[in-house]
Length: 187
Ligand SMILES: Cc1cc2nc3c(=O)[nH]c(=O)nc-3n(C[C@H](O)[C@H](O)[C@H](O)COP(=O)(O)O)c2cc1C
Image (cartoon, rainbow, N blue to C red; front, side, top):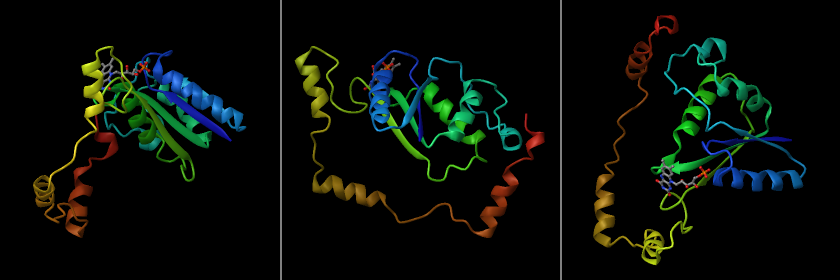
């Protein structure tokens, strides 16, 4: 068994790496090979939906994603690690995943195990005080301490109109099929 652990943080020795190292050690104790690969500090191009990868199974931007893809194909388990940046995974981690998954659509991912680890400083995950200011630390705890009133629950229920906007009727499917230009015409 082989697990591929991706560090999507630009900091190769930071908190995300620390968590991934804990995970690697635990997996190895269980007899599972584990490799950590740093990708977050590399230049990773965002996906441009160029779609050449549908023909070549490689991204036209020949960066770390193309290097990792064969290891991803072989791995039994895949873990993405990322720090929270502005309430979202760090950009490099997202670009990495977008292109990895888009360019490996022909790789059979059946039964591959997937997991994610995130690290953050404040509201992005759990309460780990990154401050010495007691009021600030209390604020961090308090973001989870709320209850919705009956009225607020009613307002939320009212938003649900039980209406589906996109239905796969033959007309809609045809429209969608016509929306995608042939691969070779894409710039
Ligand atoms: C640009 C930037 C944005 C961040 N945004 C958030 C955030 O929205 N919420 C949060 O809890 N932490 C945020 N953080 C803190 C990081 O998530 C936190 O320090 C993380 O543990 C860093 O991981 P690393 O050591 O692997 O780089 C941000 C850090 C940076 C550099």
